[in-house]
Image 1 (cartoon, rainbow over the protein chains, first blue to last red):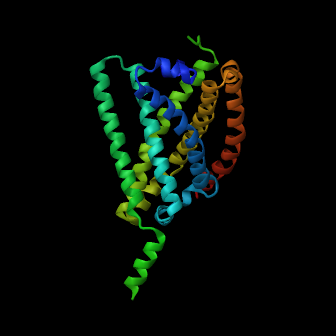
Image 2 (cartoon, each protein chain N blue to C red):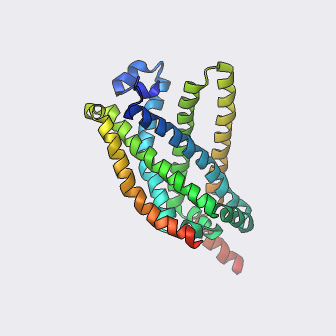
Image 3 (cartoon, chains in turn green, blue):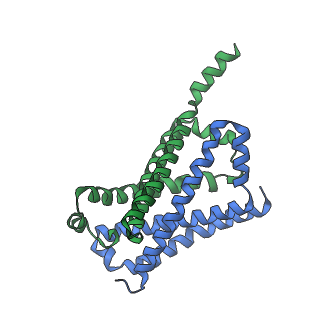
Length: 141
Length: 118
């Protein structure tokens, strides 16, 4: 259904309510942002370095850096929303039984939401580098 | 209906690559969350993902992301320009052209790293 809509006016006409229209717009806006965010992420972790060198120290140094914290939280939020809504289109198209569709959606969206929460906690778990340096210098005195 | 022409294959590839990326995303976030429990758990799990099998799998994920990104741009062209609709099939071949131009150097960089084992 979503893929046969070709223009913003088509989307307005086809959308049963504004909720669907907002998702249609969101998929395009988030998709455009994710082209840069995700390909940038892949470049930094796979091309600029050898990805097999990624260890705990590397992960913590990234998560402690304010720039990558902000980058990663947008990456996490946009990919999860874009992916969850894409999954919703697929489930709506292929699962015709409404009861089955409801339960499959409930389980999968709960899983996605749970992993999003875990990912968010991970991003906030590591103190900023400067903050960590201060804590360590206080502890060493 | 598309009757099995380029547009339909573009659509199917977009769905399959999207689902594959979502599946990987969930594993990827969980994998990195292990860092909260400290280096011994984190390094064990990261080491598991650095085995050759997973590194070849990651090349598949990179291919899926690259196709999904380029074809997503094609969809945006189709949605907002008449030119994009008229030439959608040609643009799809363009997507594959750009895909190869980017992906072949990626393979040249990463495949030897996997065979060297580090």
